View 1 (cartoon, rainbow, N blue to C red):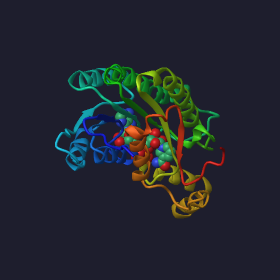
View 2 (cartoon, rainbow, N blue to C red):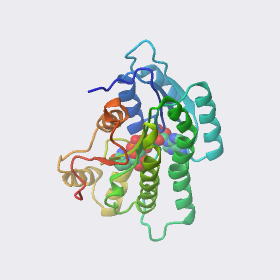
View 3 (cartoon, protein in one colour):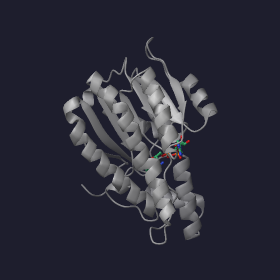
View 4 (cartoon, helix red, strand yellow):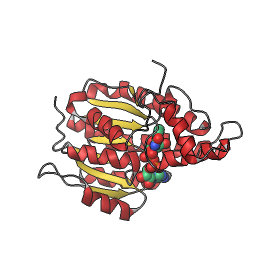
Length: 262
Ligand code: NAD
């Protein structure tokens, strides 16, 4: 199986912690040069030092940008691709705040669409010409299992993820002739800051302790545990590899079996 990403350049967004950070590490382990992106330079600079180097050609770097600021995002990624084309794009950022959809403010929808759907689109549009020129491209979007089964208490998030999944499926169809694949990875509950926030919200609502709220969530997973970020990163790295060339337009749950639908 060909998993070699030597001479490929990956841009991983939301990479300063959690799932994005794990994706950057896995891609670097397969030989890619990785540009990690998020809002704070210090965390990114540190990560660049820590990323694996599997071959002499690897040149890791970082890009400071805010997914919520569309114009500056476009400018920053424009500059990056002028310097060196991006062959692998991992679209990822922080999840929208939890809460029911009934009563959600219009601003919350607009903010979530901007940071997810619009940011993904701007990033993809900027990197696609380089992918076309290379005859190789991988776009992997980190979304959520809520694409298949909406999750209670994540109203704005559920709605936004579905929009991203539909955008990705459409794009996958358009880009397949160019050797570019577009896929979504749907993490189940994964041990990061994001899941800590969700567990804390559940505990507060139910009156249970944080430990009990987490145990209840873990009991809903057939694997009886949360995922480690590296397990999500491994799925992303596989989809980015030459071996996954014929997989496009899919929603891949990495959730320990939690999603019950087919
Ligand atoms: P996280 O909050 O731990 O990390 C989010 C990353 O995005 C960080 O690097 C953060 O700095 C960056 N970020 C946040 N806002 C940004 C902005 N405006 N511009 C640029 N970067 C920004 O989250 P995570 O757990 O790693 O999750 C990543 C994605 O996967 C999120 O969309 C999350 O909702 C989704 N997800 C997570 C889980 C889980 O259990 N952790 C489950 C399903 C889906």
